[in-house]
Length: 468
Image: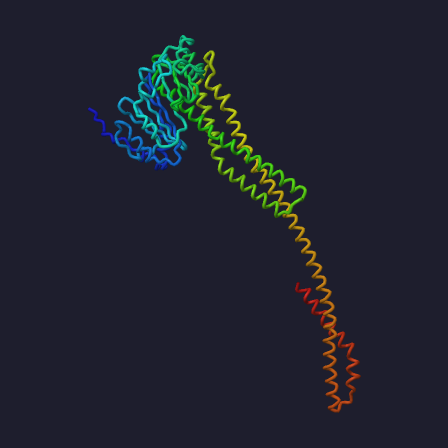
């Protein structure tokens, strides 16, 4: 009888791998950081997104603790920026992003809000109080009431009549979602239980993109019986994110409009500086002072607005991604969500992009003008240096002439003193009884002394030239 040897327990990762990078687990689990909700239809989702500038996690945690039936939470539980709370009969999802925080309340659809009812009151059956919603810390940027109901999609005309009635009888934007998708790619829905996607789409999405009297937008999703809870959760997430990112992208539009007059004034000022620089109608110092002031204003505008413009572009990219994920098809007689966005949102985004490009171009032109002015100042400085060098050269020439004059006088003076010494020597010899005429001897030696002094001076000059 063979007895298998005892097996050791499974080794840990430390036995097989080098030490983990400190961020490995966090980065690995980022893909699971915000899982889509599972929503059982019919359902009502009340969604509020608020700007969280100046709002701490502690304040948001304190507000979540005010939910009915919520066990005490700690700020540490909110460090992951995502939290789903399952309470008695409803779910609350909290998500914190860089600029905003989202609160989603998922509950069963109230009985009076079924498809076909005329603009039903959705907030009267809400599981949380109006006070709790109103006291969410932050400033509201998006508020949506999303109803998701079951109904067959076969009779499009009758279904559209019911949906328009539910939304108040006004013009709607509607899309058939999930249509014509033979393959499953990033952001697409998986096949149904039979292994294929329905060629005509899996659900309708309708909205008016209008604020109601209660401050909310309304959206309606109609899906056939049998729609899975995970698909319903993905549909909900895409629509809510689409509208939130649309509104966040539009936050750059007022900034761009407000910056327009400032850019126009700066461009006119730069044109004036360039003209004065070309015609040399102002001093360099005056132009430099004006240009520095203009450059400072442009750089301040860039620093204040570059983040907003970059964020607008990022949010707009997300909007386009979410629209692509809807895989829309037009419902006869209505405009799709993507078409609506293309016609209404694209001009605004083009304005923001053009303003950002205009600001960047103005900064570059100011830099080029600064280079031109710097070149002009450098040339003027070189001319001044050349003039100063010429003055120094002329001074040196004068100094050499003066030195030559002084040198001649020095030879005469030295010769005079040498002759005087010889004269005194001759007089001394005469007094000692030597038969000599001192004056005659001194006079005869004058040429010899002059030549000797001059020759000595020349030798000194020669040695100085050799040493240099």
